[in-house]
Image 1 (tube, rainbow, N blue to C red):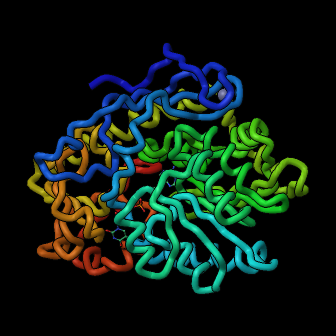
Image 2: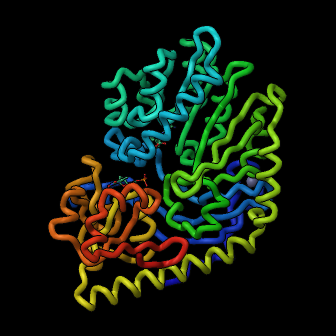
Image 3: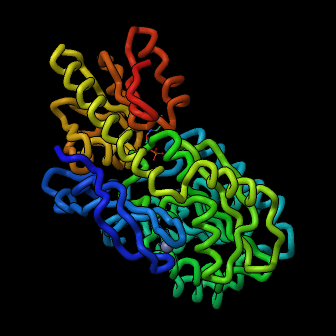
Length: 414
Ligand code: SAH
Ligand code: TMP
Ligand code: ZN
């Protein structure tokens, strides 16, 4: 096994054209949501997951992209409503937007990456004109069944122009856990600038680079997390498209998220939270290459310790089962070389993943109910961002002596 450290390579920045210095090479990785049957050709697709820091605009980004049609197929299996916590969270997000930004006459909200309607169902219930845009047909059908309007499509500049022509400008454009997935982000931001009403806001949230570095969450790197955002890189990016970062808010979901509020340049006054976050990022060294060299060393320590632990448990005859067939786990299993011999299956509540094989590792996905039938000695918690919800639901496991294994920020057993 080779170390992921790679200090030699560079590639051009997608945002500013500057030089991106590579700080980690995970090697060939699968499409993280390609949960397949054994004979599906999608199981064979690989791309090199290489990540770097731009010397110019400081955007952390990947070198190679996967085709969007391969990542977000009509049967894309992720369902945002799979977590009770996230359902509640998005209900509150929607209520907040409805009561603060959507109070004028006939307001209009557009969501990019609306998935199964986890956020829009509340907007719909409030009687607000809305449109979700998402290429994942099966997920969109779930949303439509609840009366949510969805256009099954990729949002980009041309989509934005056609929505504006047909339905008028948007008072709010919202997006969660989607903008960072999109390599062609220039087209997205031109589209946002086209579609937004003069006093409208673009509110988006994604995993936060500061948390990923601080908590060593290397599994947040996979095909869909093409960019890792921070306030500084987002601010610099927006300025190139006539947009301005006017507020930031840190949230604890998904292991650390930041919600960015964006307006047309000059339309709103930035809150003090923006400067505060920029200063914190400066102190954390998020623009310094050395920060990522240190992170790279921690990644390989985690890999070595996790593989050693799982190998020891296997040799001792202890059964270890995975919990949560997350997209994140694709990087963990494939970078660490963890397959069915160490983790015979992974439990997941998502029907669209069950009965399929996890990408690359070939670990079978089985229903959550199988977990207790009988309980394993150890559970490897791939869905660590849902630890509270899952450990509460599965409290009997621990009560009967079962132990949870986690690997961020370090390998530990609880
Ligand atoms: N917003 C939800 C879902 C995030 S999953 C949540 O936060 O949980 C990412 C979603 O983005 C997927 O449903 C995917 O189909 C969608 N997506 C990917 N590229 C897109 C694009 N260009 N335009 C709109 N949606 C896109
Ligand atoms: P996420 O980390 O991308 O949100 O994915 C979480 C995965 O974990 C998703 O496939 C659903 C699954 N899951 C369970 O199996 N049981 C649970 O209780 C929760 C909250 C999630
Ligand atoms: Zn750059």
